[in-house]
Length: 296
Ligand SMILES: [Zn+2]
Image 1: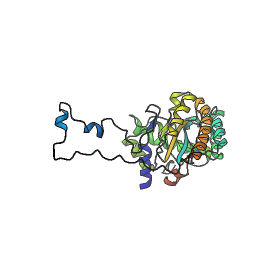
Image 2: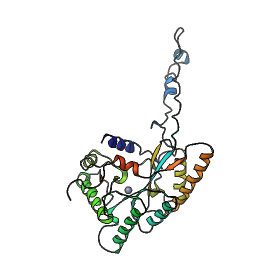
Image 3: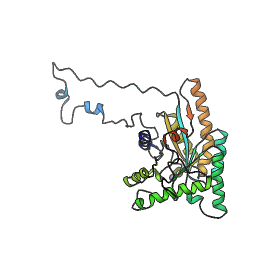
Image 4: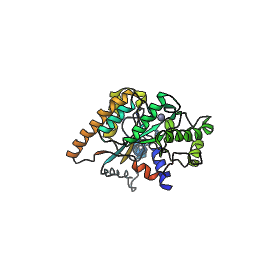
């Protein structure tokens, strides 16, 4: 339990590397280097002269604190691929094919609105979920409608949105989802309370190219290669949306780049970018955590 809350905090504190933020990832401490840091403080305050600020005779000049050496590099920079907001028949199968080609296992956080109800469309989408599971991926809960759960209606709708989606997933693939991700990554006291009651530990992300906003394979690729080249965390969750053609087009290029980058790193004896699967998340989340906890 403690571990899980710690993980949750870690994951949430990690909503950092986004396309709107500066392209370089945060420093390992999570704090951006500030121009108003130690150097600025060492300078004489405005209005004082250099003479006044100089150390008086007999007093030792204060040495600036020694720079901390950078933390040692991990054995590998681990990354987990995740895809939200699907399934979509026009794009998700192509994502599955590409992931197969590179042997990548990922998590698909899905919205029930795309596969609930009767008719050919929803049945085809449910079959797509089953196919996703057959290919070794995990289906995660992302609520039925992708509503913002921290607005005025949040406390009223959050629990229903989560538990109904868990039921829809169970109906489609025969088992409840083990993982949950909040739409928009939103957080607030009422949602935290709901999630706690349902025994759910939400999964966040660390690298977000905002592919839904860019809608441009080149720009998503550029953002991602830059972010992966400069990873500082030993383990990062990558956020994509399998419902956009630009993401579908970008994905094989990115996986090819990772393979090439790793060949270079091997030659230079540097830690590789290692694509990992979701098992470490399951180990720290109780089974069925993203499913309704009560009867029904
Ligand atoms: Zn989403």
